[in-house]
Amino acid sequence: MLLLGEIVEALGGSLHGSPQISIEHLAPLEVASAQDISFLNHPKYQSLLAKSNAGCVIVTAQFKDLALQRGACIVTEDPYFYFAKLTQLWKKRSTPVTPVRIHPSAVIDPSATVHETAIIGPLCVVERGAQVGAHSQLKSRVTLGEGCKIGERCIVHAGVVIGADGFGFALHQGAWEKIEQLGAVAIGNDVEIGANSCIDRGALQDTIIEDGVKLDNLIQIGHNVHIGKHTAMAGCVGVAGSARIGAHCTVGGGAVILGHLSLADGVHISAASVVTRSIHKPGQYTGLFPLDDNSSWEKNAASLKQLHQLRDRIKSLEALGLQSPFQEK
Image (cartoon, rainbow, N blue to C red; front, side):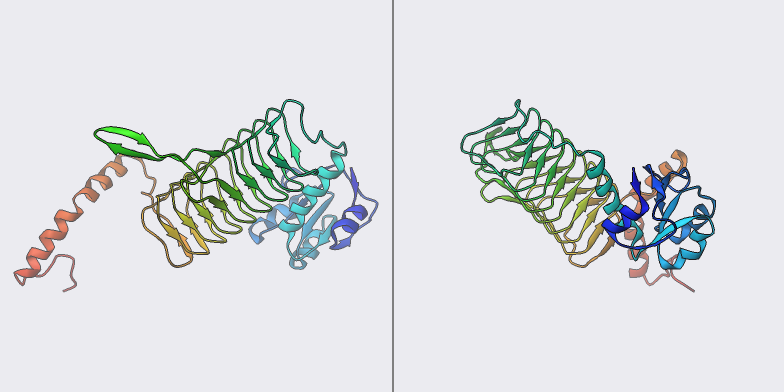
């Protein structure tokens, strides 16, 4: 439980209402009760604000009057950012017990370096020469491979494997010969890695994850990949070896980026897209066949397969001096 006065004292903002109002939960606008605090981040949800029973709502100055018609509010420039900081404050206040710094079931090689403020969870493995920076947290069952480094204030969720061998094999006389992966993984500061994600070590040079990168659950990062600062990837993304992703990019869930490609800073890939070429300009990119009912989808797919034949027929007609059926008369 927090009082509104305590929230504003810790996070700032302009409070309109009693500082003694008690907040017991954080909740969405549509289900919030008089003991809850919520937020309005986008004008399209303002109809929910008018109907909300929330004890307090975090809003911009634009929606201050509307919010006051139904109760207390906190006015701030960026309600979503304010709400994010509030979740951090709430968790800190609701879990005051200091966790065990290194769980007794964790296995840490004597040559590894773990900062005195880092937290190593149950069943973690930190291998030879690995490093964990200040205030970083490894949740349960995390494996940090030999020579791999994690910076400061990172959160690595359960089941993550950092520094497994990259997928490198040489085909020789019909058989695959293993290429030893001699690099490591270097992770910057303020990085968060979701559960059961895998980041492979580099073949010769390190796989690099720069500061502020956010990776969702079940993400595969291949060997020698380089991900720029503050890029975010949603669940089930796959990035093949030696791809280079710029800073401030986003990659939607289930998207795939092929190996040895480059994405410029500020590139945004839609969910389920397959990136088959490098992208040199910032912007939103989508590469997937639109959803449709199955019958229509099959017809469109069949037509798509004939596009090259139609193109050749049109070129033949144009070569004969005949008008293409697609040209304007």
